[in-house]
Length: 497
Ligand code: ADP
Image 1 (cartoon, rainbow, N blue to C red):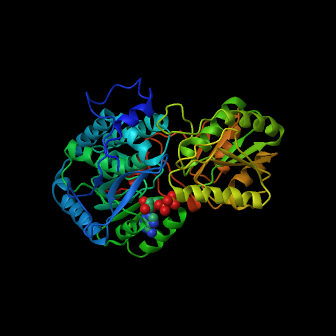
Image 2 (cartoon, rainbow, N blue to C red):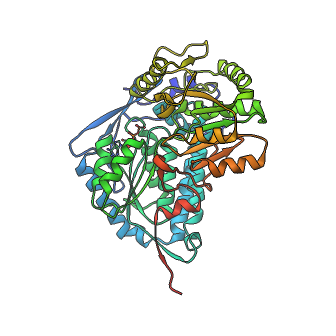
Image 3 (spheres, helix red, strand yellow):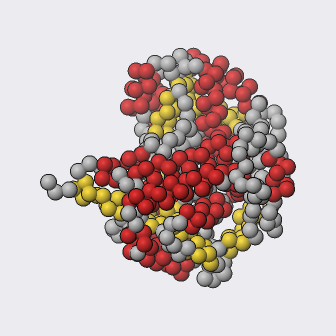
């Protein structure tokens, strides 16, 4: 099992970090230990029953490390540690102290940005360019942003007294492991809660490294606990009577199960679930820019994005032109080694996800759709799937209705704004949508009528810590980011006049 794949990594990275200041003199690009324990009460320990899971590099299939798999007893210990911290040092910390520690954590993350980016790419398969330019900077931005709120909560929700909830359980998915950890931890800690965080089983390493920085920053032990494991570990956290709130990001199926499990228990819940985002291009749009937006909308992070623009709707008058340019652009996409800075589309996160994507596309063909893929192939080793267009789509096919979570875009055309909106809304999801048009009034009308928590205009997949993110319908409820995101971690009572 690899422990320090630095030399190999350095060769594969080439000049990906040529424009980056080195994190620390002489430090290895990344050090991966053979084994990782659970982080409970500021100390690392194996699972009580010794269980482990192996996390792999999906671009090679090689094992990276063994990680403890927490059972119910471990989850119980983590919640107890979080409670002790809440009743003790963290509860006693002033808002300004919380801010100071979050600022420090954000800076530590920036200092080690390169290491985090490489580790994220190794463990998850995303292109290093994305890990470097999106995941890590945005994770740091969330920590900075929420550090700023920690001592200003009385202004966040005027007229209300804001108190922390207590111990918060946070369950995150495998597609943005570090970023989701930061999205979840930053508001929870800013608001004064303590946390038990459950990373996803296929990509736990950056959350564990972040936990090391939490300690280094000086947070009291037990404020952030990390229980690695799979679904059963998450379920044990949901079932634990000591958590005041569960924040979950993941599939709609699991999210529904969590909501059922919490029914009637008085535990707060926010769910950020799947999506089937419509990406709508009108004939007056700047087509070249729209093409870049479409490509980014579906091929960013191999399409492992809940808010991906996975359904392209093109106005009939420009459909031929858009398809021609899109196909030409797809020929230029490089699918391959995620550590290569020129890679556009990295590895599929797991073998099971690769199988699922294949099943979706094969099923689409059986249902009468046409499939287009670029002429260059994909690497043989590891888990890769080519960027894929699915045309001749009626709308009732499985691929048009369900979330694929892969680099697969369905295409349909429309004539009028009304038809575009109706098509876009003909889904059980409601997370994201995108509109490309030069007409401001049309953008506003579309935004009013689209059933989506986030509507982008003349861009796609843009995120900012100040901007609330979340869904409607079966894409979930609650917001993350912005002032709205704080409310999910606060107990609010009216201030008496
Ligand atoms: P995906 O289908 O994208 O893998 P999941 O919803 O299965 O998404 O996983 C998201 C997160 O939820 C992961 O951390 C996973 O381990 C966790 N999880 C899976 N099943 C359950 C469950 N029954 N209860 C709580 N957490 C779960």
